[in-house]
Image (cartoon, rainbow, N blue to C red; front, side):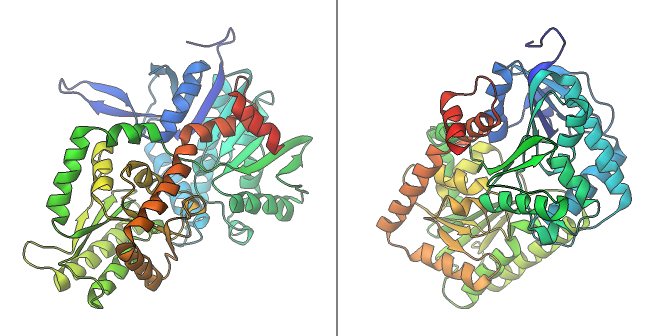
Length: 480
C-alpha cells in the first residue's frame, strides 16, 4: 500500500506509541482500533495520502506483531521488553527527562542503566524508521522519549528529510545542563532539519543551548551543523475542532450534559478540572485554593461545587503513587470540613472518560480550571473553549501553559501561588456575563482558526514536504 519499488514509504511518522489500542471484542477476539486524539486525526490523512507508515510501540511488552494496516495507515511495531519498558519508558523518559523538562517540579532520578536502555531503544526506533523510509523520504519524529532518534536516523539515512516535534516544554539551559550525557541528547536533536516546539521561549532555549553546549553560532531561528541548516521554531499544537463540534451538536451529549449538571451540581455553580494525575498539573495547589476559599467564607458549599477528574497515569512510578495519596487526602480534608449529607464540596473521579463524556462535562461546567505548574500546551483548555458554542463559561488558566500565549482572554493565574488561583476563581465566578461572552468569543475564534490541521500543515510546509498545501508553503516562504 503506497510503497515504492524499494519497499519504503515516502512519509514516516515515528512516535513512542502506535496510533492504535488493542481491544477485546464480545467474541473474545483481540483486535486493533485507532486511538482517539488530535495527533492521530491530524496525521492520519497525511500518512494515508502519501502511502506512509507509522513506527511505534504497541503499549505491551514482548514481541511485536508483524506490520499491519489500519484506516489507510501502515503500522510498523517496535518491540520493547518488560525491562525496557521499566528502564527506557518509566525510567529515563518519565522519571528523568519528564521532570527536568518541566522545571524540576519533581526531582529527576539519574541512572546509568536507564540511559543505556534509552539509547538502545532509540537506536531500535531509528533503524525501524530507516527501514520504513523510501529514498529521499520525509520522517517526522515525536517527543521526549525519542530525543536521540534524529541523529541516529541521519547516520543511517543521510538522504531523508527529518522533522522533530517536542510536545512538552524545553527547559532553560541551566536545567538542561544538569542532565548526564547532555551533549548526546543535544546532538540527537541536531540531527533533524526542523525542530519544532510548543512556544517561542522553548525554541530560544534550544538555540541558546546550541551556542553554550555545542559552540555553534545560531542566527535568528537557525543554526548551521556539519554543513546543514537546522531550523528551530514554535508550532503551537491544537485540537481537532471538527470532532468537538460534532460531539457538542450530538443530542445525546447535550442530554448527558444536563444530567451531569443535575447530578453533580444541582443548583450550584460547577467548577471543573480535567487532568492526568501528574505532579506537573497543579492539582494539589488547586485543591488547596478551593479549600481556602471555603474556609475563608468567600464561597459556600451551598453555592459552588468542584468536580475534579484525575485520569490514572504512570501508576508504577513512586512519585505518582505518592501524588495520588496526597490528592485524595486533600479531597478527604475538604469534604470532611465543609461537606453536608448528600452535598459534597468535591466530586473526585480517579478514572478515564471517553470523548463524549468529557465534552458533556465541558458543557455542564460554569468555570474550567486549568492550572498546571508547567505544561507545554494543555489541550483541555482548547477543548473546553471549542465546546462552548453557547459562548458561556469561564476559563481559569495557568500562565505556565503554552495555551496562555494564545488564550489570553482567560483568567490567567500564577499556578504556584494559591492566593492567585483563589483570585482567578473569584473573578471568574463574579464576572459580568457579557464580559464572559466576549472573552469566550475571542478565544473560540483563536482556537477555530488554529486547529490541529493548521498545526500539521504549518510544520510540514516549513519542513518542505512535497505536496504540502499551498498555504503551508506560502507560510514557510514568509518565515524564511
